Length: 287
Image 1 (cartoon, helix red, strand yellow):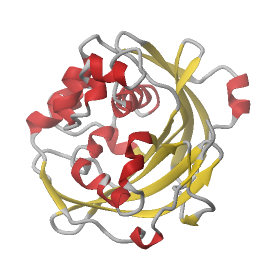
Image 2 (cartoon, helix red, strand yellow):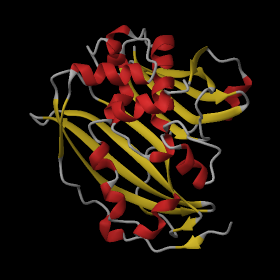
Image 3 (cartoon, helix red, strand yellow):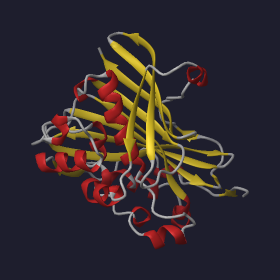
């Protein structure tokens, strides 16, 4: 399908959204861990949040800046393209967090256009807890040349796949996974919950939340190369490559890239058979 030329509004860039407040409860952390089949005890007990739980406090704020840039009549074409977390410290029960977001750039591509959102989460006292880059992708829309900034790069070197991975981690997407993940994450999108809505959208049935798949990969990476210690994780980024469905079996494959300044960098991908469902995976772990 040929891309349709659409004008994005550059005046919507670099404007912070209203702040959203969120109090972190031990029970909510534990619910999120259980909803992503996380086996790490500290997460399941709610003692410390899994890394992708960082999306929960920002859920209300993260998409508002997109409305300031993209016209509403193309929102039916938007999908979550990439997610990139930069962690300054873990989230813990009792934290009172404040999140805000802004669009920082957009760019037309051959098969669609991207809008990059920067999301910032701070503690009540102003301490920076994490930063996130969300890339929204509009299918078959051409917004023209790049304006503003893209998210930091995290491309997977294809040559790595010619070598056996350093480690692998497996996960199974349960039949009821989306029904557990939706309330735990605060994501009510019906494509994940209503079979008929999904089929009306041209899908074979409900699809798993991309961030649930990302969360599953993250506990696998933490177990294999970080001693299951989320406090060592400094960055975690993926590109959402293909849809995942209930009852899928997934494998996350991990390669060591190198070490510098006390940080070891790993590349990873998550596959379903021969299909790469999470690509361009990057994890930075403090030694």
